[in-house]
Image (cartoon, rainbow over all chains, first blue to last red; front, top):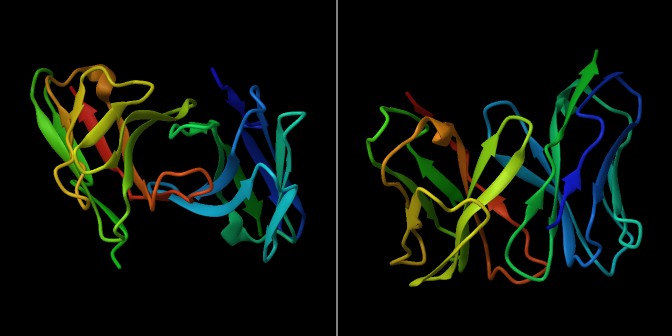
Length: 111
Length: 114
């Protein structure tokens, strides 16, 4: 059974600092990994989707890397802003329809 | 496009009551799914559907029923509510469910069972 872990559970940084969020998974037989953002009381918004054949994916200030062999992905957010405060979740997709989610990292960016 | 919509946003039930959580999407997506989110546990898959008339169980299906009569709608039925079903429920969809497809989520339904 795929286990997805996100450490730390919570993170607080001053504005302008770069954010590094970690996601690890136990079964490397995945097809893709997706990073989501969740604001309090809201649904999930997709940030980046990395296919298993890719090493990284970038969108604006966001960069996600994937190392399948070691079962790790990292989400980098450059020059953090208070608007980046949210919970960030990663989810891995095996060769079926069932996403496995981590519990998330709650980020607070202090102005 | 409204995307993925869910109703109601909030619901309080008594133990033993039944209800249906509604989910609809207007993106002509074949694949739809239901998750529940509990504190500290991430999202867990309840049921999913790869097209009209086709459904299958996820990780935590007990106590829930689904059906898919149209491409647009995927309701989740709680047969006899229990306090353990207190949770936030999310519906998601993607174009085909094939690997590589991005998932789109609804805003969620917050359910409390007393």
